[in-house]
Amino acid sequence: MSKQMNYEIIKLIERDGRCHISMDVVKGELLINWLRGSPTIEKKQLSLWFRQLAGQLEKYHRCKKNQCYRFLNVYSVVVTKEQIYLLDLEAEGNAFIAKYMQRQEIRNGFSHPRAQMRSTTKTSIDLYSFGRTLQYILAHAQVVPGITKKEEHQLLKIIQRSIELNSKKQYQNFKQIQNELSKFKLHTIPKNWKVLSLLTVLIVSGIVSALLFYGTGREKKSAVHLSKNTEQKENSQTAGKKNVEGGQMRVKNTDGVETDSMSSGGDALPQTDQTRINGAGTSLLPQSENEVEETGDIMEQLKADSLENTAEANKEMIQIGEKAHMEVLQYLAMAYDREEMNQQAIKVYGELCQMSLQRELLEQVYKRRAELQEKEGMNEAASATLKEAMENESLKNSSVLIIAYIRILCKTTEVDKANREEELNTVVDRIPAVKESEEYKKLVQEYGITEEGGKLCIGT
Image 1 (tube, rainbow, N blue to C red):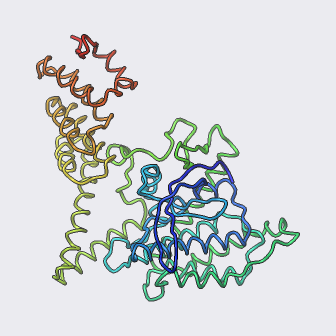
Image 2: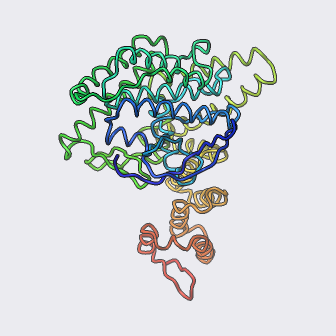
Image 3: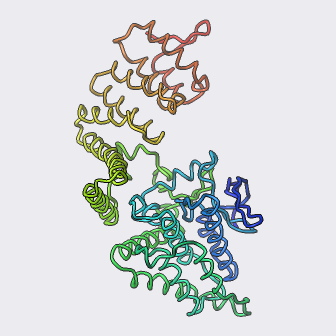
């Protein structure tokens, strides 16, 4: 096991047939990091992991009255010497990982393709992710001794019934999976396990290939999409080992998640949400055929709801419609921005500023709107945009917006200097630590900011 870290996890305690949830901190590593660092595992241990994971989810559903975990994948499972745990995604210390899991390629690989649809049960969302997680582990782990044909068939059946989109064929709960996994026979390690381990890759390939051939319709396309992502990742890792100077390097951020970065100067992943607004790419744009089909599914659901005209259907139309409206505005803002149709982009960004966006995205929307207003010579408007942003409860301590606001205050000439200096002192007093940042020090040099009698003054 590679370097371990402390993670906040969900601890499920069962007493007298009753299940209770508590939070705890354990020393371990994310499953994704374990698979990348030391993927050789005894079959007995692998079987135990599968049963533990199914058991954790069964208890979670029971404790939460069938509320789903929703974000099960190789990034949300913590591996320790004793067992595996579900990551507490609401814990502040895991915020970075929770945000990273919002990346489109991760959602495409592990999330139920119809998670937003009314016909999808909460249990089926976790069942689907469970099957995908098992599939990913089998595609990356080296199991010793090798998996037998009978065991291969058992695993294939479990995965198929977990990711089956037809609710009549899919498992109904994790108790059924636990019963199936109990039939997964265990063998002791023979003396020639090293020789047998060489066959593991071929056996695992057989499982993945079978999934691709037996999958039907949209599920088949989704399996192909995941397989391609896996293959590309493996190729990039191999290339990085052979040529560090020109290929990819493995890096580990402070939160213990290994990510990819290009040695030619690219930023370490995960990228900020800025790329969703004014960068070359966006997680909102369809990245695959699957996402385009999901959009079609949503439209079909809206049409079906419109014909029902019931309170439940109308409520669902409102929820889906409001979410779609918000995403359409993000598409539109980005398109206007790319085509340098600044006035139109400013208007749409203004609408987005009034919506319930995630904090990081909302921060970037406000910042980008102010940048475009400044570009159009609208310095007062840019100043008003940033001031409005800092009045937002979730953004009032944003150092990014405070630095942008200070720069506008120093640069603009439309407002009296005394008033600008008064505002500058008010903003800096809110977060005095901002004066220690490199961005602030650059503004001090650029605009001649000085401190006299405990008050900040803007240079002439």
